[in-house]
Image (cartoon, rainbow, N blue to C red; front, side, top):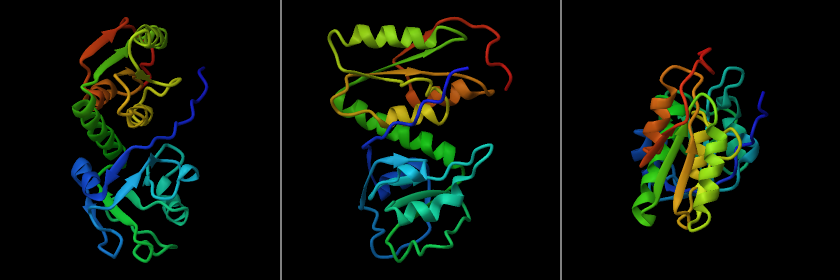
Length: 219
């Protein structure tokens, strides 16, 4: 079994207004410091990786609910947090810290929407192209070969390790910089409709299917 690839840091920039528009979210508070024009730098779903001025997305997993760590993320300096509708931080006064509390229907979907917004902005500025690779086997090898070939004449950004699911792919996309010419995205599947959800995020110019079999079909 493959090991877990740590989520890489990113320096994606969003204003509060851009987050609201991208995610169809609602601003829970309107205290001083939560102006819609305020800019935030970097997105994370790990409260341990929060940096001052960053966006914290409270994802809900099989074992952990990151809403339990929202207060800690605010204390560490997050200036915007994405939470499920109806959630309110308790231990920390977000309003007193000028933190934008943004409510969304589904934080995982919102993470993907943020990534798509970032990708479209990158595409418009750099005229970059997206290559998405999937298949029951051979995805990673094909991704690495594609990245290596592009590096001869370009500056591609590619999936790290096995970050090919609905959490990993958005964070790969958020790592895009203006200097990148291509995105080479590995797209996996372990749940029904996962590929269509990921394809909607990366919106590929070129799609590669290495093969189709019964692998990873437990979901």
